[in-house]
Length: 155
Image (cartoon, rainbow, N blue to C red; front, side, top):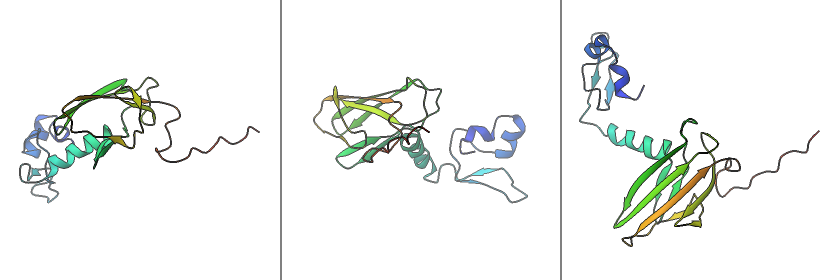
């Protein structure tokens, strides 16, 4: 429902929505005279919020002061994705591999070839290119920094 293109898939929906299908609307009216019409597409922060949903909620990248976190929640059909991200003068090339075709659960993370906590990946503003690799998989179901409880004994 958030994706504006879903409000304009047919000619009749375009006529009803009456706004750009590439801009996130701040409102979709429900008044009987204007039901389904989009509004406030260029006057709100809704595009910024949609960007945050994508970057933080789906791709899992969150900037946290001197660190960033990677905790994706993606469609299980995605085998991999990448993010090219600039922080100051530095460039981060981030690759997330999903060999088990999972929706979430970070099994391992590396920064420049060394293991790193995906909940606290250090940021540097040193003008270098940094490579981050994250692998989703079993063992990554508990949030980082919390203990995983052992499985109950078999009956």
